[in-house]
Amino acid sequence: MIPITHYLILSAMLFAIGVTGVIISRNLIIMFMSIEVMLNAANLAIIAFSRSLNLMDGHVFVFLVMAVAAAEAAVGLAIIINLFRNRESINADTFSLMKR
Amino acid sequence: MLEVIIFYISALIAIGGAVMMIAQRNPVASVLYLILSLVAQAVLYIQLEALFVGALLIIVYAGAILVLFLFVIMLLNLRGEKFGYDQGKVGVATKLIFSLVLIFELAAVVHTVSRSTNLARTSEHLNPGFGSVPPVAELLYTKYLLPFELTSILLLVAIIGAVLMARRDRADKEKEMT
Amino acid sequence: MLEYAIISAIKIVVIIAAVLTGCAYSTWLERKLVGRFQHRYGPMYAGPFGLLQPVADAVKLIFKEDLVPDKAERVTYALAPIISFIPALLSFAVIPFGDTFEIFGRTIDPVISDLNIGILFIFAVTSLGVYGIVLAGWSSGSKYSLLGGIRSSAQMISYEIAYGLSIIGVLLIAQTLSMKELVAQQASILDWFIFRQPVGFVIFVNCAVAETNRAPFDLPEAESELVAGYHTEYSSMRFAMFFIGEYANMIAAGCVVTTLFLGGWQGPFLPPVIWFVIKVALFMCFYIWLRATLPRFRYDQLMNFGWKVLFPLALVNTMVTAWIKLY
Image (cartoon, rainbow over all chains, first blue to last red):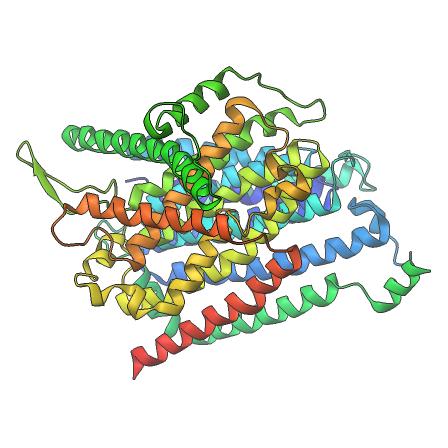
């Protein structure tokens, strides 16, 4: 039996990688995917706790998080498509101005 | 023993995939590495007896969300655009502070978690049917009914929002015509 | 432990061998049947009834030159056929091919692993198959391939929703996700879910055809407009892998339909495995019949059909089934 601490450390590392991705990447799509990595890191921690406490509630949380992630992806990608139509680029730096 | 080996291999793939994802300049390769990382995480879920959620992870993320990402990347045909990592307007000092905070945070988590004795107790005996569909469904429709229903509203709003945003305005179309 | 491992390994080898042979002979069956539909004979010269035709095809494909286009993204280009092939094989892991039987004093269950989320596993694995096609389209560096890739990603996502919803009726009645128990609940012919869930069956079959990119839903490879769509640039064994992947997917879809709606391996007189094979083969013939009969959809028709017909129909079917189940 692997102790739950291992899973928590792994989850923390994944979360840190996700944060790093959002900070250093200039590509909107990769930034977006980093956010998904962070959500998944949280999910992993929840599942690990769920297993260790022998409670199913954590699985419900993960289920809800996934639904939210799906909604987020749909809206976010629509925003990215709109941004690309305006500026012909998905580099985050090109969107620092409010006007065209 | 086998359990431990599987854990470490999956953990390595999960982390490696995530790192490669942010290191890649080509967005399609990024998507592929993210899928790799997610599949490894699904293995971990299954190791934690969360069969249903593990299958959902693959269906929802790999089967739907990331296909959507690929679709957008191909639609915009992002092959040509190259991205540097230091073209940003953020100074080196800010970056350093941020990374230090992150590393500190990570170290703090590792420290607290590895010292706490409370967490080390993992229940050996699970309820029968742990991780399968019926218990999740039962919780969803009793204890968590309100959040569940709210999620459906959220999804509806997201659909409407996405359609509205992705649709070209009539004014835009007329501009293109002329 | 060791015995379990050995038995599982034997099962895996037998099933993979059977599926690959099945794929090879599906191509023969397809050419033969389409030939008959068009008033000609189909393959005749290699062996009796052209039975050695798949072997001849394989030999020819192996000796073809393996071309990589100049503009291709090499790694992804090489990976794509493998990605489209592996998930198709994986889905056979949870399909029960027959009843338990005894051999050399051991009881053997002809299913590799009876997961209690069996049907979800199949959905998870088949949803990965999209990537093979999409990546092939993207990495070939050709406009036709790219169009095929974009089409297939949109088509697969659209039809996956109705695909998933169409089986919810069955799962509501059966109250299980395990493939074995689903078969066990269809003991007599009147209990087959095709009779208890006719609407679900029709939607499921439509979506299965669309998900496997077969005519009339074969827009990702539409010959008359896109040359060959996503696999335009592929040759030799890489092309063959796409081909085997497509047929393995068709057989997998046939197995799922058989297990969910047509009573699985249940049937009188003949041994269970034979019944299973007969049902799957009939479903393959249905696929080929469709291909020979129907013209290809236009792209907007395809999207309209998926979103405005199948999806609402599947939702209504789910609601009506739930309502009947409750009252």
